[in-house]
Length: 159
Image (cartoon, rainbow, N blue to C red; front, top):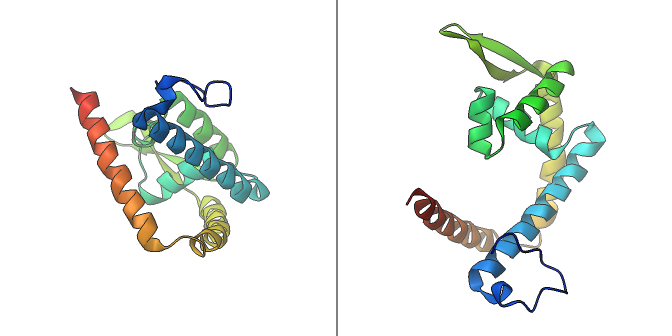
């Protein structure tokens, strides 16, 4: 169901008429738009949405690459590649865990903090533009519904 691509050629297929399929396609569409806007925000700073996610995780909750990947729902190898690039640019550092010398915690350097602050400033401008057209109550209601649906989907995946 979720692997069906939405375009005009397949829009009349019965699978796309199910409420869950329409919901999934809407979520994918909005996610794509959010990622595109993330790229517009980060590109002038020489970054990407994926790098922004890792920088943000390292700032908010320094942890291992595996922990970041798990929390972000990404493959560990993907996060490791991004961390390697950010490290080579001096934006993150890897701090060894004394109890487990094979594992390191990803932390921000001062240069990483500076880049992240610049990204957040650009994001605030974009968010203010969007929030001038959407009521906070509407967003709160959408968030509540997404969280509820997410909980149901999570429960179902555990069964």
